[in-house]
Image 1 (cartoon, rainbow, N blue to C red):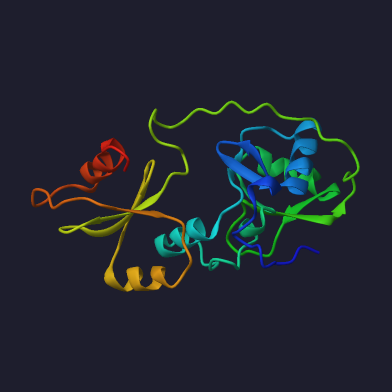
Image 2 (cartoon, rainbow, N blue to C red; image 1 turned 180 degrees about the vertical axis):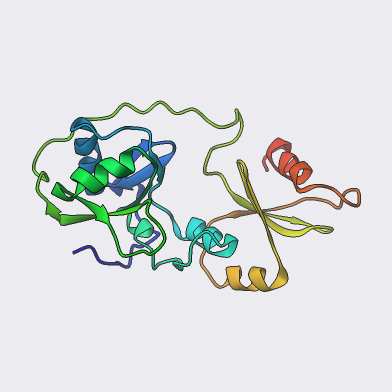
Length: 207
């Protein structure tokens, strides 16, 4: 049975394997994932795999999840939010590979890996070639940071992602360990849009 560990959200890079779309899984879960692909599971459907503490905290604050940092199986690298058509394939065939829909209500896309149930654990996986395509030339897909701008307050920003932290959220966020870089942007014109701030973050030198 999969359990939460002290490494939740702090899994060393050497224990993670890049699958696709910038998403990684723990080594054993990744091997099983590749075995499922070799058995016919559609590829390109992993929406969210491993999450570190910072990313999990961002998702809690944005309302995308209720699992606190350190309390999600995504932090173990054994959970996969899966798009169709792979989701249907896993429901039909995934149990033999250790994958199944778990107990999380209202999340049909959320699958979890249990190595004790993997009947193919000793079968060598078929590697899946990964071609990295950055969303923007100068932005990594998972590059998120905290932005402070006097007229706008504190934002969490990334490629295609922006969330404003109100004072209460900011206090709550500071309670969690995080690895996000803090960037301060000088005050700008009144009414400056968050999109404009986003561009400033990724175009200023050494931001």
